[in-house]
Length: 79
Image 1: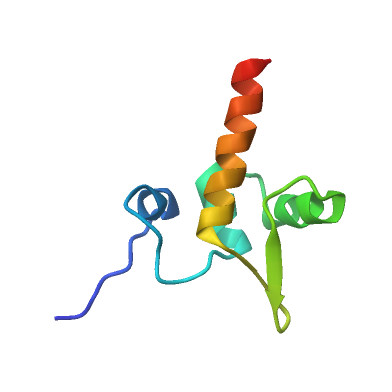
Image 2 (image 1 turned 60 degrees about the vertical axis):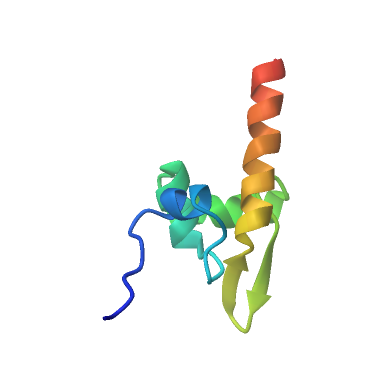
């Protein structure tokens, strides 16, 4: 029986850490961003979740994305 991959990365984070790192496209889906370019702008401005390069590909640790989201949510709630 083949394993099926969840289609919604947000559901993956809620259920625990996935067995793969997130792509910029995953972040676009998770946060309903207008385009992948937004993720790259966040990276250039150093305001987004921390990412790392694997060759020419950008990847994000799901735990770091979750921590970044929690921090941003706390800042928004405090304001």
